[in-house]
Length: 264
Image (cartoon, rainbow, N blue to C red; front, side, top):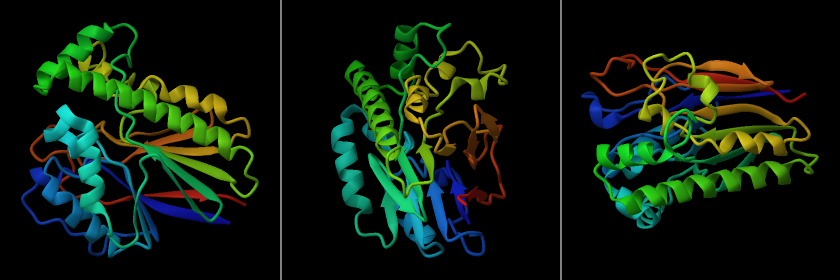
């Protein structure tokens, strides 16, 4: 038996001129949206509504852009986002949540960053670089780090609990931030930069140690605007970012990436 879903992320609809439409693009019954729909909150609900019209279930994980203008109060930002997307038909926000479809558990969090994705760089310097780049307070930086730790903790606990569920055959993990620094070692422009140090959460890979029954099949992520589809230690890591219009890496013509999982 096989199930499949469409992977979508980093739509950045606030940077594209044309109205967002998903007509004729769906290839599956289910969709996974791995964050960064837009920096403008007014875009998020309409995009999720448009996607929900083409899928049986839309699984959504927020990215950093959903909180771009509210990073100084992430507690309030999460509460207002919850209110803004509440009640959209067949859309499930995966933050600290698990969805089971045909014996496959989808577990997800934003992930955020621990500012130490690359141990060759200074954690404090990278944290300060993010605070200065995004013009946020030191307190906001502390909130981001606290959420990164909390998200990793939830993911690890969830994976551990699912090991004893006989009905769960496979696990799909969904984060916005990059889960493994090895995925980015090919990028010589990113290597040795504070951008690399803040692109992922170094605690996420520890969660794999909880997968004693080898149930993790695929790890979907976003944030990094280049195509990655590779296998590390028997886990498939895959993204499908559209990117920001006008940047060096973006897709003027964009389609979902169909992911297939054999659960037989």
